[in-house]
Length: 147
Image 1 (cartoon, helix red, strand yellow):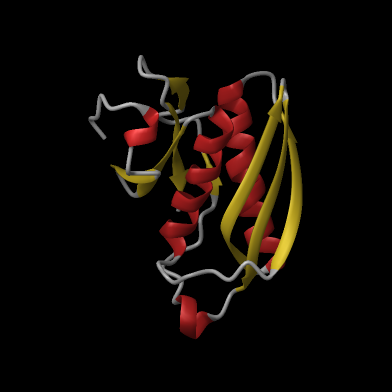
Image 2 (tube, helix red, strand yellow):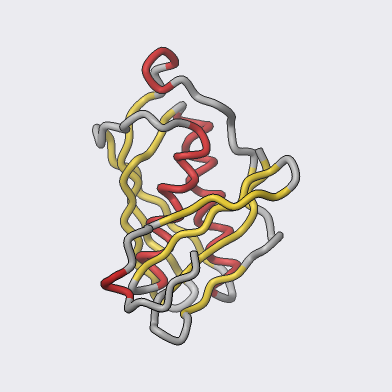
């Protein structure tokens, strides 16, 4: 995404970027927390393009020594909850306080017919890991996800 617009003018909230057999996810936002939320949407879009109903809320907590490692922990927490609960999540809320992230995932049980899952993410990696704000103040959070 090559834009020099202000954060309010940015239309894309997330994107995928290619990486060998894996998929890169990148979220954008006015804050790091918002970029993390939108990266959650990008993660779900690897699995399905079907709408996800926010029927169940799941709380997650992550800790890491820096923002980039916290981002990997966040994505891996989502992947873990997807796997153990057999759910997909379409809405995310993140609050970052220092080294700790408190988040909420809203979603529903996987419906194979309706969601037609394309793949199952295995884990977020440190490849292409970057969490930073650009000169305009737009935050992005990105890494490669093993699928």
